[in-house]
Length: 205
Image 1 (cartoon, helix red, strand yellow):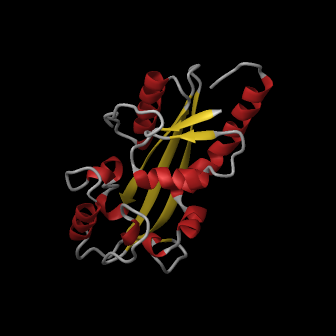
Image 2 (cartoon, rainbow, N blue to C red):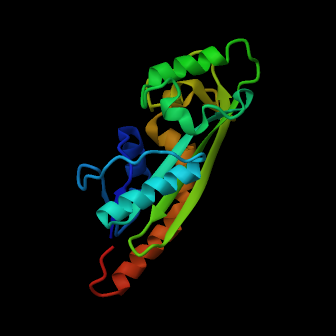
C-alpha cells in the first residue's frame, strides 16, 4: 500500500517517517515521489486545514493521503498563534521571526502555559476519511534553548520536563510529541487498510 505524506515541510516529513517506520506493508511517498500543488490553508481550525490538504492532494494524485495541521496555542494570548503558527510573523516557515514575535508578545507575562495540538487526517481515493488529534501541554521559555527540532521547539518545555523540545533527541521528542499522539491513534486504521489491501487481489490504494 502506498501512502502519500501531504506536506512540503521537511521537518514534518522527517518526523512522520520516523513515527510510521514500524508499519509493515506501507510504502511512504513524499512530494519528491509524487509532486502535488500547494493547498491554501483557509480553515479556521487545525482539523479544517488538515482535511483541506488531505482532500485536495488525494483528489489530485489519486493516492491515499495522510495530511496534518499542527500549531501552538498559548493561554495568555487567547490561543494564538493557533492555526497561524507557521506564518505568525508574516512569512510561512520563518521560525526565528515567529519565535521572536511570540517572546515579544509574552514579555512581562508570567502565565506561560501553552500546548501543541496536531490533527492528522487520512483521505482515501474511495472517499473514506478519518482524523486523529494529539496534544502536548507545557510552557514557554524566556529565550530559545536547543538546536534540534523545528518551529517553536526551542521555546517549549513539555509538562513534567526540564528541557525544551529542541534540547531533546528526535527519539525522545517523538515519544511524547503531539504528532506522535495523533499518529499513534491513526496506526490501527492504517494497519486495517494494509490487511484489506492484501486480502483483495489486484486492489491498489
